[in-house]
Length: 115
Image (tube, rainbow, N blue to C red; front, side, top):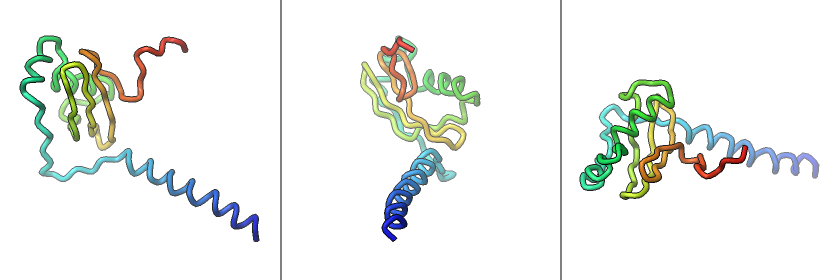
């Protein structure tokens, strides 16, 4: 009986968290969803170095082998030096970041050169 309870105590939380991660990766948006508007002052500054929202949209479309209209912004948080972006690409939720004028996936480390 103790072994059964111990096994259940280990298995149930594992299954619960496994289901949560699957659910988080999907993004189901309503048909009338409107993307958040970026700050115009920041966008005009970033236009000088080709790091605007439209540049990110092109970058993400190439990375994920899709067309630009498949990239939908869920959340935009940016400053002149950096930015964080939550995206929905072909029904999958992704996160990107900007450091200066360079876009990359949020889990990538540009300073990690040892492989």
